[in-house]
Image (cartoon, rainbow over all chains, first blue to last red; front, side, top):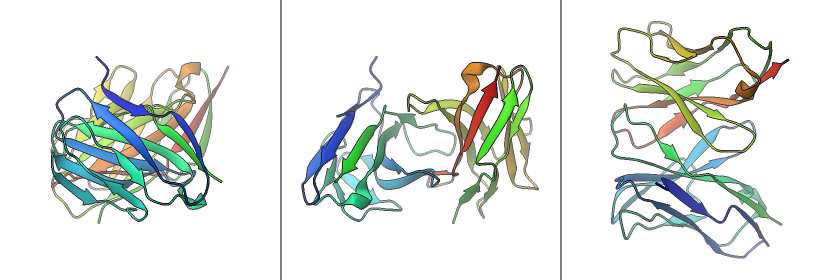
Length: 114
Length: 114
């Protein structure tokens, strides 16, 4: 019963490098999302998806791409890493988008961009 | 637009005392959900409690209760008989209709002293 699995847990990049943060869930959730957590700012939504083939931008989408080819997977791509993208990234999912549905979170990825 | 405000950056409480963490919210929606999450030093996000905007009674989950005052737009978390393991970051969050994201407050760092 894995829930939401994120990889890697830690990553160090150089400015300009690209990488993909992986997220997979085994709960058959339709809704998946990516958040970033910065000190003093809580969690902010980057991108989200309401089902396979459907994605949309959140509050802070610049510099990130997503795709949703399957229900289970929702990878986050950093196109050209910048120091401002140093953050902790969380993937989260829920069965649907109702107001009473809590999000299940992955364990997070700590990313440093030098 | 939805907004969550947590005005207490940090709180220090003696073990076994009750503690109230403040949360105010702003929304024009009639239907919404309010959530509290705990983030211990290990970094994972743990769901604590949920309150729906139409719920007439305050939510309770073990030692956690939510003091919901709709007219004042507040959703304070009350932890009874605090324990050392309650030391963590606490986030208040809201999900509205269309429900595509959870909006988070900045968080409150709670420290329980022995």
